Amino acid sequence: MNGTTPIHRAPETPAARQTLALAGVFQAAGLVDDLARTGQVDQRAWDTLIHATLDTNPSSFEAIYGGHPNNLRRGLEILESVLGRRQANPVVMRYGFSLLMLMSKLRGSDDMMDELGRRLTRIQGQAEHFGETHENVIASLGEAYQETLSTFKTRIVVQGDPSLLQSRMMPERVRACLLAGIRFALLWHQQGGRRWKLVFQRGTLKKTLDTLN
Image 1 (cartoon, helix red, strand yellow):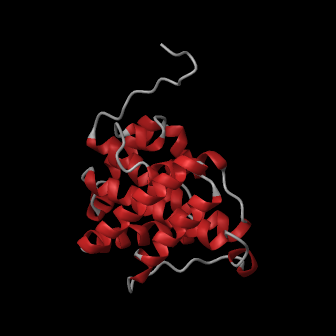
Image 2 (cartoon, one colour):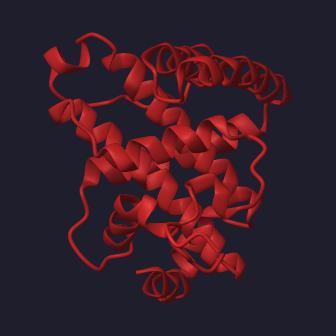
Image 3 (cartoon, helix red, strand yellow):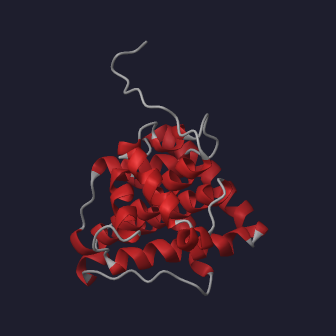
């Protein structure tokens, strides 16, 4: 056994997997807000999102987020706010729920799903050469989002510091983050997550959050 590897039990229940996937959605929403307002993000949270986006054929559910819930800590904290335990940031909430809506539209377009899959396969090759968070990879992820998901009529309008949002690589980083949110939204749906459950199963979500904290 490798003593340097943190040991954490894999999520055993559908509720736990749904909660972790939803945390990924809201982690992406939180990082979009951070980028738009400050230009800075938590590196661990960012690396987790980019890895999850690129790993389209993970060996296990927990491999998607790096095997430990702390990699989704920011998203889990935001999710607690969304469920009413503390004051939620309305902008971050809007981004998160918009990502879920956008994911639903993507699921209804087989052509766009196929195109996104082809693009991600090409970008995986880039990531193997340059590294997952290299700016060439981030630029390609941003372009993939811009040329697919942002063509829907339902679009996510990002608020923030205009000078920051127009700075070098910032549009690409924001779009890459939004694409990561879509990745986790699809995962949430695959694990049985539905929007009505956010209303009618809040108690289950809160209990599951307690087990992950």
